[in-house]
Image 1 (tube, rainbow, N blue to C red):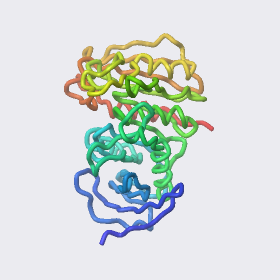
Image 2 (image 1 turned 45 degrees about the horizontal axis):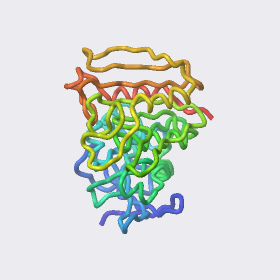
Image 3 (image 1 turned 60 degrees about the vertical axis):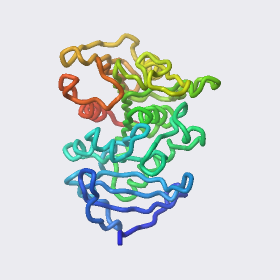
Image 4 (image 1 turned 90 degrees about the vertical axis):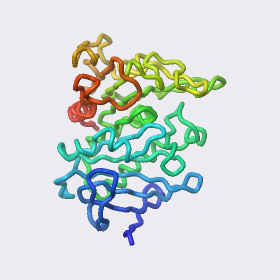
Length: 321
């Protein structure tokens, strides 16, 4: 019998199934949930049901964690039709967490079992958007639940997402900047037009500066770099361009409008960075030549390590009161 402990979070009932495995796919032996979660990946079931299905998230505790030292947290949001576990594998965030000493929280979007999982990021996607699910609240509540058992450094809560998850990351940063130290969005946009007969939706202008890192392939056929309707889209939705998405943060953060431009990794990666921002924020954009929609991989991009780049960006920033 897998031990289950019931907790309360924002009016939700949570049941925790713990495991000691460091990497997927297999979860190892159950841990004692009356104590801080030990090193490894743990699954948490939430008694918030959507169409009768309980929601869940995973949390990775880094190797060497003693359960008493407050650790930084990376909130990691998978893309549409992906899962938390798949995102863990593809991004390598848990491996990096073991080396660098941070917690990773992987919430799961709604779907049919582990199929078609997605988020309500505002203009996208699917059933979650139509139901107007509070996925901003769900993702942050998952972090709060982890913090009830394992100490977290609240000044170092970072959000990273891919595709639909990156769109939600932008939304969290815009709507809840007071809790976010920095955000990274991969293959994402700040908004778009959900359908031909619907108005454009975009994240609101944040009331305070937020450090933002964007990574986007110039050959993305799902969320086009230049915006508009995607080649791979079956509907009539369209997205806001990368330039306009990044521009929102440059303007809201009060950065100098002219970026510093660097070509890197044999010309496969262009880095634009904006400085002079308020509250020591910064904005950076990595444009990936010839790259599509997938999470960036090293070999085709001249050794560019997206996950390490994101963490280096994150660790420069702490949230101030």
